Amino acid sequence: MHKPDLTIQLGKLILKSPVLAASGPLGSSLEYAELIQLEQFGAVIVKGISLEPWPGNPPPRLAETAAGMLNAIGLQNPGLDFFLESELPRLREFKTRIIVNIIGRNIDEYAETAAALDQQPGVEAIELNISCPNLKAGGMAFGADIHLTEKVVWTVRKKTCLPLLVKLTPNVTDIVSIARAAEDAGADVISLINTLGGMAIDIEKKQPVLGNIFGGLSGPAIMPVALKMVWQVSEAVCLPVLGMGGITSAEDAIQFILAGARAVAVGSGLFENPGLAGDINSGIKKYMARHSIGSLNELEGLARRGGL
Image (tube, rainbow, N blue to C red; front, side, top):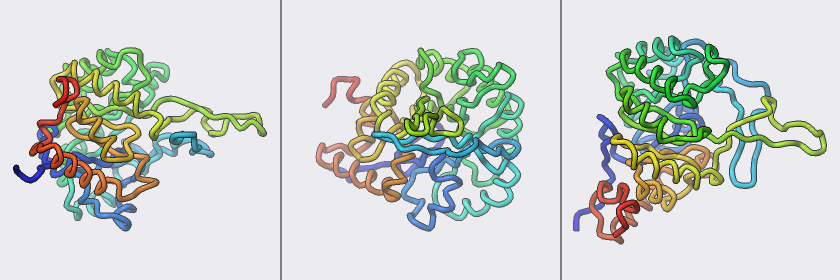
């Protein structure tokens, strides 16, 4: 029996681990580099970068829930120029892949940001966050409409030769149609899910807890929803799927892989356990050894094929 091999291919990327750092919780990942070895991740996906700086939403921005958290950060970030000049050079020092999540308020902003990243040394791929509100469409999220999804992915695809991950919002009625539209428009990987819409109310103040009223729900509470959507999408498209949503253990990650994910990303779970990626890598190896499995390819989508 060969030693368990965690190497996977995600689009054109060869990754030493199937565990990625999801965009958001780690920021640029530089702060976390003081706590953990970023090399534990197959890749780090940096927090969403926009063409110009975004100020984000008014506080309060975070609220705990029974099985997770609500956030309404508002995609605050220092903008593309700051990232390229101050953060990317430092990220290049680490022996892990760098994927840049990009955001925009209209298609032109997405396209210009992607074009600027295309030839940057160290940038291995782009993750297109299409959960942003399209101001020209009255605030509708790009990923909530098939035609908008297809248009923004197709436009960005023309601006870059980098592998393109498309991150989908779960706040739709038909995730499969959205995923197929992204595939048809030129995506290399489908990344799902983003946060679910939610809110909380302070009963003493008799008002919403979050300054933005609504926020995105993440954490263990959303894992069953994420797992279902990974199953559905991986059945419907020919692209690899990057699964995420509430993963806090190796057992959680294995469920996503069995459902059809090629790789997984961890986010809010890192707040509780900064060493989560290492724990998941170790747990997956033990699971593979126990089941005499040499390659993760043998596990991908196995539950859909009737199991072992």
